[in-house]
Image (cartoon, rainbow, N blue to C red; front, side, top):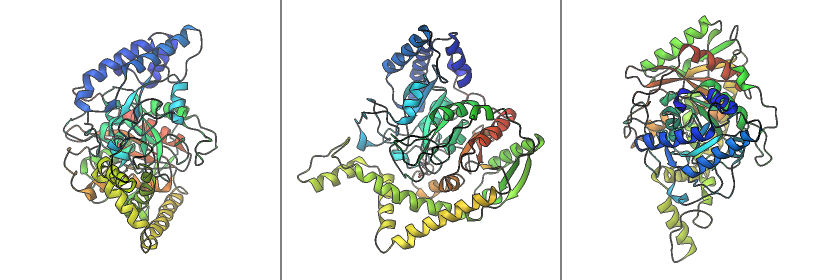
Length: 484
Ligand code: GLN
């Protein structure tokens, strides 16, 4: 049933009583039973909780109370976001068995909007990765071809939405972890402006970059979800105290006369011809809708990968120090405290996480700090200025989201550098703190989805929704073959 609806359509049905939240819950549970074994998108599901939330929504309606914007809408949650009393492990063995005593702010907001939280989604351990292969639960699979990656790190959220085990999901994006999996699975994914959404209750990877954002089956659904989760929060000092725009309204605004910048650095070596072709065709359609396409330059793009992997690993090495076997999850019994820390971290963290902790510790160490960390911070400023300059001339920037469509599981697993390069187009917006979105714009010769990335100035998410809606009007993907 739910696969026939968008988020907005289903919410309307539940609000009016045409469909009950309990019917939705049963349908979701059946879909999870049917598809999750194949796609490994959800790593913890508690059917009784889904049914209890649905019953509460139906009772609220029966009492004559108005239902919220996400009434009865099934939303899957990345395993890095705290849900009270429910397993939250960030895809890591070190947090096995951890159930937080509180809800993240975004979760409290979803509950208030009467959403049905359907379970926790698979992810690369601590959000470090681009393929979901760094998960303690094994990789999630791409619903369009289960021998391929759904992307990462929020691959489970993307796969859950693409297979309609949920109509929306939350992910987190530090360097592309919402946009890249959205691109690879034919879904819409949004990384909000840094500070637009509270990070309270998000297990931290790199705190100056992390943002929570939505996945949805369509642009309007992602706009509605962002409208629900955005806003200032006293629990997160970096959350911005500015009003939330009408994102959903922005979906129907006109494009006429708006200026789209196309950065030449994003159409370079390594870009697949199918991806380039689809993105350029989508841009030509926007032009026929009345917007003005101009080439622009973002000259420091080529330094983004190196800059990101210094800053993100530095912050991660500090953030992950808290997983010491004392406070949460796994503890490996040892003769002394020092040995216990070491043994727990050795057993609990996977290979990529250890690599990043070592890298991050190195770039912060005395003697190397200036050469690596400080220079990376300076480069980050230059990358941000590239965007400031560009936005003097254009309203949004458009590019491919990822250089290729979904690659085979295992293809890049042993080559960290090749894996890091798949984030080449998403990292700059993260470093600049500006909002960005991926919207489906086509498919490659094998039928795998292609995403178009849009980037806007700080807090101008509305523009993303206006442009993405136009892209979607020309091209909306069907369900993956093999998913009904
Ligand atoms: N793939 C990038 C990394 O491995 C980005 C991950 C993310 O955004 N969480 O760090």
